[in-house]
Picture (cartoon, rainbow, N blue to C red):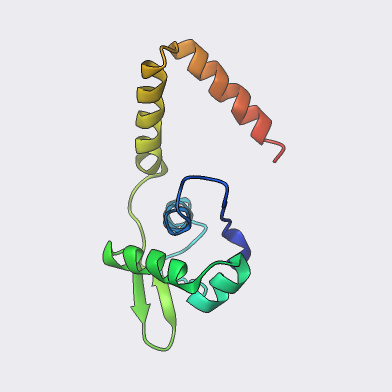
Length: 124
């Protein structure tokens, strides 16, 4: 499980936000199952070489929104997420469309760029 988490330090997205987004995606995709235990704060912080407070912040925010549950003697477990993958990606798609329009890019240009990038990442 721990190796499923990846953080990028060369991005504007804070690490805690990257972790929150990854847990949500893992929950929606089924890679994390309801009731499944997440790595401890210390374990994940050591693995990712980040401050434990960063992990704790991500877990606390996920707990506050109801996606994670703290269980005594077990740690954090997934409660489940009933959203679809499409619902989860919708804000990113809306943002992409808004940015493309602000830049004056055509629908076809964006669709072609998306298709090209999709194919490039098939090998990653």
